[in-house]
Length: 78
Image (cartoon, rainbow, N blue to C red; front, side, top):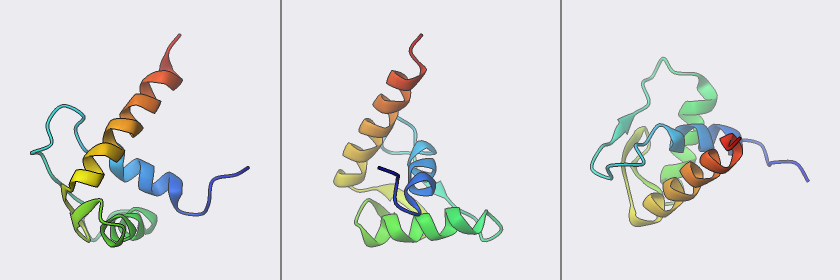
């Protein structure tokens, strides 16, 4: 199985959110890589973030970021 197109970019955007504070938002600027801009828009459409350029996490987004950060820890364990 391979990851569907765009998932890696969506994960990259989610990794930009702090795993420590849900009150910290992000902004994907207009000069960012096009795949990150598109990923942020898709995350907004899916209800994970409040704005199409990032913003703050929704409750679903908080769950997703927790899982993404947990996966990152698992994959970096020695």
